[in-house]
Image (cartoon, rainbow over all chains, first blue to last red; front, top):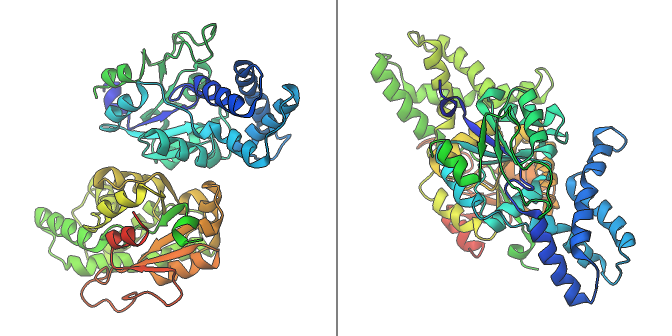
Amino acid sequence: MALTDQIKALTFDVFGTVVDWRSSIIRETRQLGAEKGIDIDWVAFTDRWRALYQPAMEKVRSGEWDWLRLDDLHRYNLDRLLDEFGIDGLDEIELHHLNRVWHRLDPWPDSVPGMRRLKSRYILASLSNGNVALIVNMARRAGIPWDVVLGAEVAGHYKPQPEAYLGAAELLDLEPRECLMVAAHNGDLRAAASCGFRTAFVARPTEYGPDQREDLQADPGVDLAASDMQDLARQLGC
Amino acid sequence: MALTDQIKALTFDVFGTVVDWRSSIIRETRQLGAEKGIDIDWVAFTDRWRALYQPAMEKVRSGEWDWLRLDDLHRYNLDRLLDEFGIDGLDEIELHHLNRVWHRLDPWPDSVPGMRRLKSRYILASLSNGNVALIVNMARRAGIPWDVVLGAEVAGHYKPQPEAYLGAAELLDLEPRECLMVAAHNGDLRAAASCGFRTAFVARPTEYGPDQREDLQADPGVDLAASDMQDLARQLGC
């Protein structure tokens, strides 16, 4: 049977794969800095915020911390950045709004049109470490056409823990082999594959900026490699 | 503050409120009966299947049974109906398909247009006892514009247990008072209200057929009472 006939649902990584978190956050924080007279390197700020992402999740994965949704991990890290970059002058309402910049990320230009095509044939599920409210608010703002929001918060486990993938397949009432994990990150795809998912790499060679060194191309083990979401739709017959 | 400004999300009961399960199942089972030469009273069959719904969930609520998704409870009850109505001649593939008639229910005519209007202003979440795959498949077939699929399976508790409502509010990262439960059933609304939700009754006076006796009108305690989903959209300023 062709891969296109075996697959029932596409499960998507979101940060980097569907949305361009880095450009979105740089743009919004630069504007905030200009308005509030905060003159720091917002590119460095953005990259540092993202660099603190995996270590914070690792505290949850390891059991050192009880479950915290990603919004709370982002806020924990943001508070640390305020010290590191010497930012003051933002009140609690402004900090809450800044932390929610992760709800206001812009999709890559091909994401929404490609996903609309993919939705005609497949169930589209988010399988992100972002919490449900974050993914829902992002989708409403950006027009991302999810059928269902799954992922870390629903499964109670952060990727790449297997429960995150297996929990999504179970809620979809599908076998893992009927699910195609779509991500710009080979590590995410390897973890999904080890749970029995099929895998599609979508290239996002500037996710981390012009000097990106990792995930420039698909590992040999993936089932599909696409140049963007429109190319994925074409390869999947949509 | 006006109710319309306090509310951020609408959480919907689905069976009876959004979709007309009874007409849909009668229509499809009558057709199946004609095709397979099974001559029984499909109206009685449909009403009996629905009558077994609450007792089966009660076995899960009470702890007598471990968690079972609604598809599995429907199948358990269907197997019982095969005996009661003396139905044979359906193979396993046909029975699986018949059990999934609950994934193929048609919306009331006002549901999708009303919900599209409501979505312009509010997050639309399913808060049904239907399992995730059921709600997703139903929505894809019928064009129901959910932002997010929540409810019993995600919360691990069947309504009217409070965990079902509170779990939805938590995943939405909202206070219960920011959620409006929309249902055609006063009991569902009372349970939601006891968790702090605001409540909207939508009248479905023929859900149980021409002789319906219950839930013909809203209890006095609800926040809103609407004649259908278009009327609800109008009352909520959409």
